[in-house]
Length: 92
Image (cartoon, rainbow, N blue to C red; front, side):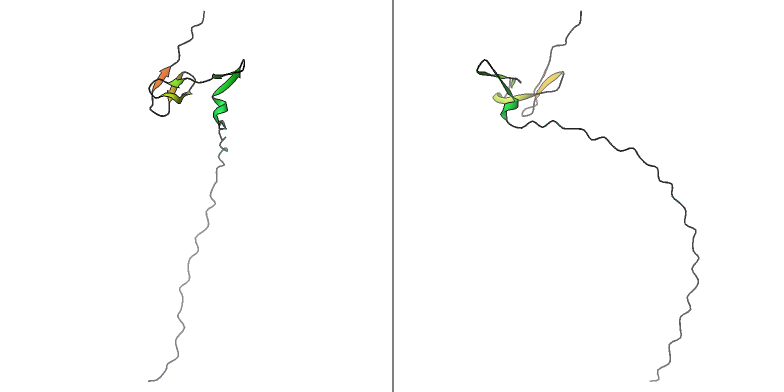
């Protein structure tokens, strides 16, 4: 078995493609919404004349202990999904 020297492999020239400049459009930054931080029972009550006053109503289906969320034009229960609309204010 005779060892023959390896022939160098001739590489074909690689054609270089011109680099296209990509136009990058800058997008405006998104404004993050600020969430209300409401923790604890003290957000559901207000002290008036030495007695606590409820700021939100209880759910009519679930009973005492389940407060309804205030959504501007309506109240809704997060437990059962019950919704009660606020009376529309008429001007004039």
